[in-house]
Image 1 (cartoon, rainbow, N blue to C red):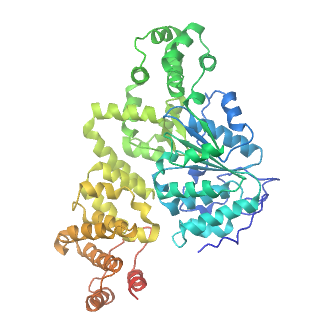
Image 2: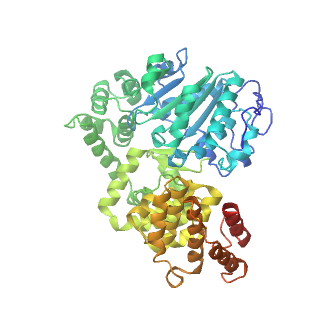
Image 3: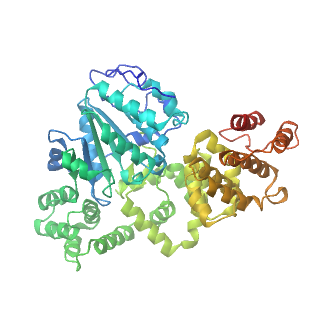
Length: 548
């Protein structure tokens, strides 16, 4: 358990105690010791790398920098309006000025309160704050700590620091309405004066904005601020004024559409720009569809095939490209994509992981569905296997769900501990499964057991029991194997404990006897290559912890 009075701060030192220069907010460098962050994903602690074609936005930066800086700066606008770019420029400016600035790129895994707090602590440490008392807890994603104690301890620590601390939360909409969002709301309510939240979201989040507006504690960066002015659009294109004006008018100041227009013009020349600027219709979506078709059709057949093969991935590296295309030149492909400026984002400073701009990826997925629908399931299986082999388990499960391949789903879950993995890593390891099992009840018993366990651990005990009873009726040794049956029997006792039912001591002793006496041996709940080995003593420990 983490107390709230034991935190220490050393503004001139990094997370490993090395000197980082005078003042706060030293740059977080991937080459430094980050062992305590594991299994946290350190690439989420820095903004995406900026594009080489980014245009200076002095008015936007002046708006963000205007004093006094409020408690909350909220950038909310639809996809493609440059919210992340704007706040990342602000973040980098703060870091250069040695100011504490913590960044977190949010995804669905952060919806769980403890997971979010673990990443928040990691981001604060990356900003230069000394949080050593939190490090071991963050490594285990705070499974042994209470969320209310941790959040209060952080607020108390912020007050003790005194110096300004900026907390950047990108893609906040992914946690809005979830436990993590409640933590942010709590922190906004009780934050000391030196704390500033900078939040980017596609929607206006539920953060008591009316109260914050009434108190003058919020600054909102909206479409009106992010939309390119006519002058900025002209500067961005560097073309004949009339042509640029017409194209920027079609884009209606939408930064993503302007970027796509620039690429199209670079590939096709000013004359093509005249044709593009005279295209009928003013609907932005229609214009974007047309523009994307033009960009895509200009690529070689080979590159188009690669893009369609990997567009199902939210992020990719060279190994995934090779796995999904059957090629061996993944790095060369990445180089070709970057050279063509095909809306690719670098998401880590090691230049290992990449993603497509969401608009471009959406377009590619639509093309894939139209042209090669039979390939989609195959590609998801390949992605799942590759992510699993690389230790990225949650993404492996997500793609297994999308593949609709029951045999592979069963193999994946069995090879990685089944529901026992939740005990070791937390519920977020299997976050994609509940939705999948709801539409595929009983098809993969291991998935139903995991979903039942998640329900019980999140307070939905009755639903967990219903799911368990439904699947246990078809789980027998000859159908699924002895190890799955045994894991189901253990889970049955765990659910009974949460139901406050009287435990059949004789039956429980019999289960102990089967495990200890070797009737169920060798225990094959986890093969040797699994990341969290479950042994007979571990199973006994689980039972002892729950029932003693």
